Image (cartoon, rainbow, N blue to C red; front, side, top):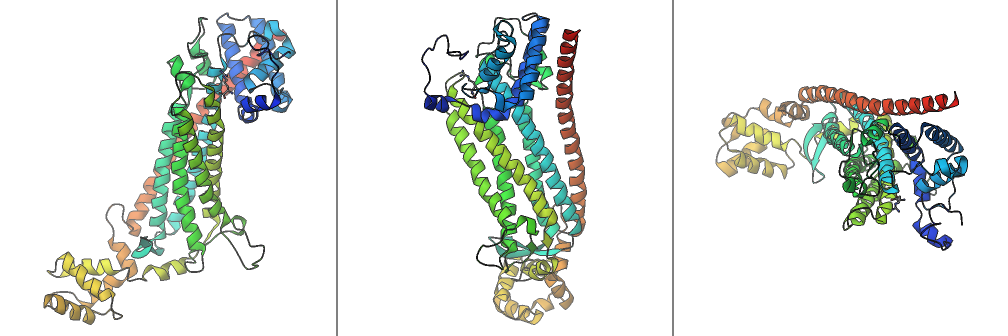
Amino acid sequence: MNNILRRGRLGSKQDPDVLNYLSSMDADRMIFDADLLVDMAHVVMLSEVGIITRDECVLILRALDTIKQEGFEKLDMSYEDIHISIEARLINLVGEDTGGRMHSARSRNDEVATCIRFGLRDELLTLMHELITLRKTMLEIAREHTKTLMPGFTHLQHAQPTTFAHHLLAHHDALSRDTQRLLGAYMRTNLSPLGAAAFASTGFEINRERTRELLGFDEIVENSMDAVSTRDFVLESISVFSNIMTNLSRIAEEIISWSCEEFGFVELDDQYASTSSIMPQKKNPDSAELLRGKTGAVYGCLMSVLTITKALSMSYNRDLQEVTPHMWRAAGNTISSVTIMAGMLSTMKINTEKMESAAGTGFSTATELADTIVRTTEIPFRTAHQIVGTLSKSDVRTLEEVDRIALEITGRKLSDEGLSQEMFDGALDVMENVKRRNVVGGPSPVEVSRMIEERNYQLSLDIDTLVKKANFVQDAMKKLDNIKDSFIERGNA
Ligand code: ARG
């Protein structure tokens, strides 16, 4: 048996089904590049502090380069994970006397934790980028529609008129908070556990700060036991993903209902729709439906990770291997959903006439009429509410009818108390309703335009933050690559 891991303590040949059960090889495809970079940073550090020689370091770095070029598929899949399989290939290439030194002062426990933080960091950066693009799309559409009237709903019943821009901004703001949440998750993900080894760190005089720097992490996870055993950063990220999916799913739900004949507010671009195999006329909003469905899949990942990690003793337990695929799945689904949402929104047809004609239906101006009565007469709001509520049951919506009802309820006519025909007409005017709601956060076109400007400014700040984070990581990667090349070149000289 030449399995480099199982030739000591464990002698027995492994049944393929048992190996398959234990193995993370398939999921480890996701950390192939990360693991090689972690190996490179580790051996550079080992040689700098004198744990391996420079020559050994050069040979290992060269072989790691070769392994990278060969690709994941070339690895021996009969190993239980990528870490040991890469080490086996390395030993294959440079011999055990050199290759067998790479794993000094390290364990697969700190190695895997480093690799998944490294990988998740990329996913978080990509997701933030996509989310920013989506927010930008929403703000651009909103800018076009500050005067596009539409019905606003509570309990999915016509409530008061609003504008499409105001409605879009509500969704935008939720996604803006999600961007902040992602930044928080990123801060607690981009930390280096490397050097924690199995859990008790190491008696070798390693330099944890150096591997942190070479791998582009912001800080280290200090306590070595915490470093290998926590997956709280995964939980935090998936709960942010779940939150994002909830917010997207609510938009998807609206796209689905608004696409139906009865609403007819929007029509998806053909690219995002499907048709029926039997009903030739159908145009179905399948992309929005799938997004709504994938939301459930992401919640499932959250539940899985919560349950897998809930009762794990300190420190590393193999259960943790089961966490990682959920993390990739949740991240992948969330990223693609954000991208699809931006595409759906930027290409869909917005039927402004349908929206505007629906905006005033269902007596959605009733609140403004009650408010107008309060502002122009001595009547208290609760009484105005009763008068207009009674009016809403009548087919006639005239000042005379209001007077008739008011006379019954209060013994007074409102037209005698200051409610003019002009005021009455103004209260029933849909655009006027929206314009008058001009307090902070309200739907008036002036207020919504101000909100759009402010949100564009916040968006530019978020872009700056994201660019800084991405550059920090990229600079570290370039630096590591240069150091590796200079080792190899000087080794050649
Ligand atoms: N495949 C393992 C994981 O994902 C790597 C760490 C294995 N460590 C161990 N002590 N068996 O967690």
